[in-house]
Image (tube, rainbow, N blue to C red; front, side, top):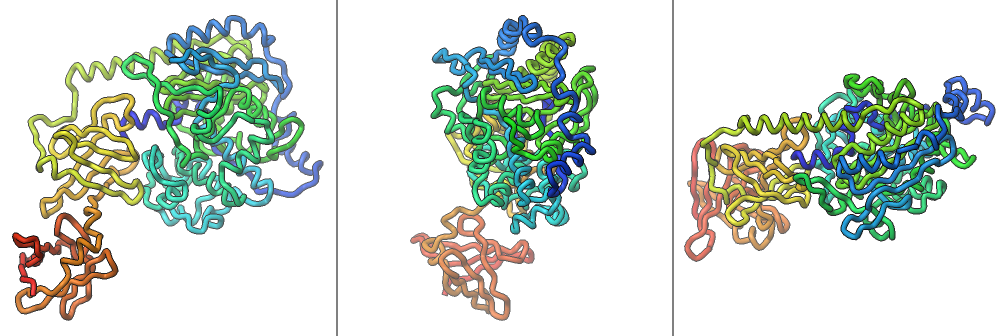
Length: 633
């Protein structure tokens, strides 16, 4: 996918992984065992998973909260100005007490409406932890085993790799170790339903073997949420409301931005475009909901934070077993990366939580991002300190900066210059890009031209996994539409085109390369939608009319081809058959215009010819050994 699409669907992972606090985790959960209360308590104590063993649960912070937060409001105001973030909502939990729940800036710039603790923001991939929380509850209920193959629960489930199909477990899906890279362009703004996307997984190329490498993957979490709904006899949306929202009193939380906009207090999304902050449309991602479609506010999210800070217990009730809550917070897959900053340790993924360290303290959490929103949920389980930060501007690290600053304050540590560090990084990156641009560094081959007239590139192209890309002429230039997103195609070199620079278009600067077949026709296009595998190839589709009875019926009949009579028959209302004496009957596959390929014979095709009146009078056979014409009888 283009730079724009990669940026807006990254779910904030890339930046946070660099920081070493990428708040996402992959979890290991042991098989459910039925024990008496005291027996289970002894068992958890042996694993170091009781509240006491989890580490000084009620330990007091180095400074009182009031003292620690002196000057914090001014600090936030300055950061919002520097990073050009319209609105921010912050929640801080210490022990079981919410010590900060506050809104900053504007949720709606045009109408000058303020952010409040009740303002609803998209939380992006923090949603993943809700999905695993539900799955853990199903494990507690005896309806799911983390380590049984998914195909035992979803009989039609298939991946591209047969071995992975047979072995992939729910634990694998929620720990980003399926072998699949992101393949995000399949779901981003796509028309596919959740069921259709699960079915299309079989067409997606893996880049690693199962359980070999950590590779963030939203589609696996979508499938895990779909599985949860199927096991419970409902939908993911219904289940997360029933098992999490309602018990925790999260009355404002929902699973679709369409519901958010019906609220009296919701934040609008903003993005940066050429130094200007502009409002952008809400991105509906309901189809991949279990991976990132939840929207919430600080009041609700601090309640959710307390659930996981207390190992699945909320308001005195064990909603999620301590075993499964603990497994969510245990390292499952190493996230490879250097140690850049002294405050941060190496990270791993548990089950929908990232597990790392901050100033030597265990740190758990997850980030989230979708068009116009960035969020961060973080907690130090041993110190019983938790932070939630929600922002309504995409493509910026402010929630992480604020989180680390609050941790510094509550730990009584010197405040690290996170904002300056990341601002310097951004400036160096921009300077590097500008230098390459000034020096004219490019892969573009000069003085080339296309092999065909522009109109010949127009058509519909299809990939079994990703769906349809449509190319059409528009005012003398080509325009491509994919997943309901449209962008012009400008000639780059030879038969490769490029979409223009546009920070607000997810297809920004995407290269599209066309391929010609031996007949000289444009046969396919390829796009680098997933950089960890080969380019995604879309094969040209025949015009839809070539599958209609009205188009096909006039082509039927008998044709004299040398000494033989060839019959063209119609099967049903949409398929032509080629019948040759003494040979198997073969289907004719629509290609272009009046030309059909012969099924099962490479290089063989048939073209029908019309006379001046429009009547079909001839048939032409194109074969590797020659071209042959026959008259209609």
